[in-house]
Length: 120
Image (cartoon, rainbow, N blue to C red):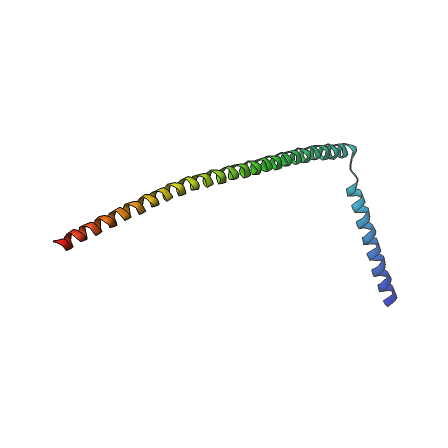
């Protein structure tokens, strides 16, 4: 009885496996009309992908150009800010020099006034 059960089980599995293979093969075959439609869709998808790739390349080029322009503008800004700092520093140095001179003059006036007060 055991041999019969094993044989039955093995043959059942073989038949199920063969049925699945036959069913899969039937589903994979397409009609010529369907094949043409799928081929047309594939061609269109390839064209779409090529167009998207071209757009991506165009965007990459635009980004590279923008980064170059940004670098140029940053250099110009740096040069202008350095020039502005030089002008500001020159003005501050001149103001500091004038304040020192004025401070010395005021010290002299204070000394003169202190002498006059001391004389009285």
